[in-house]
Length: 200
Image 1 (cartoon, one colour):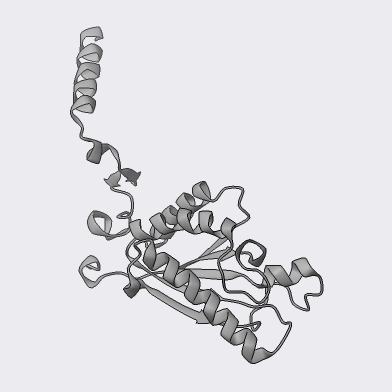
Image 2 (cartoon, rainbow, N blue to C red; image 1 turned 60 degrees about the horizontal axis):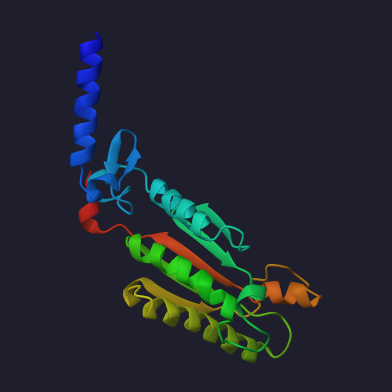
């Protein structure tokens, strides 16, 4: 019995030593394994797409911990909410310095999980002219869109829109902070299965 245990352990260690770095960088799911980004597709195409979103959500949480970013999953979409007090100053579409670090953390996740499309929604607060706010919210969405393209995310996966103050986080915002929170960016990351991955 002792000899059997020693032999088994020996085989395990030899196998582990021979495993390539590529093989070790896998995620185990229901007894199957795949490289990150391929849990719902590729070799695991039969797995519910929600797992693909959960995997991204967990990775985003680990990279954005303590930064005040909220995520929410309603399959087939993972929504990422970036508060306006982090992103933009009043009447500006220039990305603030502290938003750069957030976008730099999000970009690699978007590139890795390539079976998604990303809708970028720019928002404004309710102060000022509605036409100006609409234009400003579009400019904010485009600023994020262009940043992601510059970071290597495929332009074919990216769409941006401005919604002005039509979808406020805080209705009837009165304080400076409340208005700042309404000047947010929302990313809607939606599963976009390639036809080759859908085999029934």
